[in-house]
Image 1 (spheres, rainbow, N blue to C red):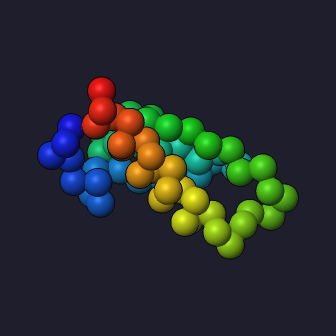
Image 2 (image 1 turned 90 degrees about the horizontal axis):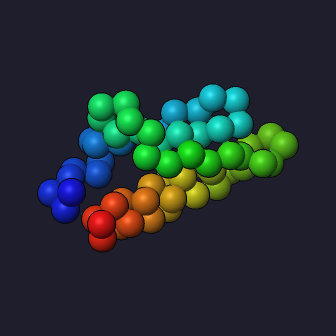
Length: 61
């Protein structure tokens, strides 16, 4: 997985308060819940941090 192009290999999908990180094949790699009432202006930044952490864990395996 170290050759994975992270920029094009994943996307965040929002379903109400749940965000799922999916790879290009639609496989869910990670799920996160937004527990704020109206969302947060830092949500995109936080999701990208979570994606980075997820890919770091996958590359270690």
